[in-house]
Amino acid sequence: MALVRVARVDEIAPGTGKVVRAGETAVALFNLGGVFHAIDNRCTHVGGPLGEGGVQGNVVICPWHGSEFDVQTGAVLKPPARRPVATYAVSIQGEDVFVDVP
Ligand code: FES
Image (cartoon, rainbow, N blue to C red; front, side, top):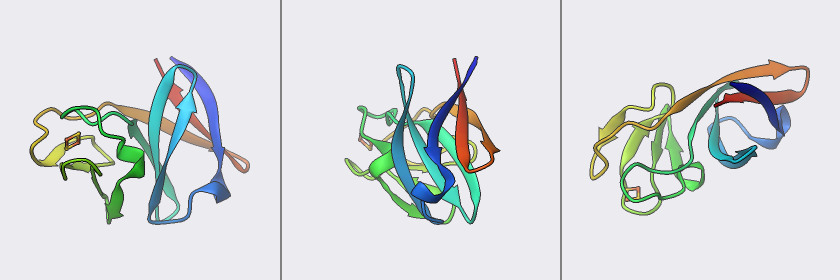
């Protein structure tokens, strides 16, 4: 695993998400009320960009076909996706957000 700096804390407003790069991995990074969570950006349905999806509470809605995932656990909450997305550990150091990716 490698800790990679992906963003500044103030780049992602509370209640929103963003696609960031952590080396070769595209990560969907979310700010839930000041607590950051990271999941794989690729929806497990057919690869929609989850970091561009709408956020409602702890749920992200895939912009392509509407699957819903819990951004804290990666669990599928609504199909058509059936498989959970990978989650990555997030740490904050000063004003920077780091994600631990394989
Ligand atoms: S690609 Fe995400 S729901 Fe289809």
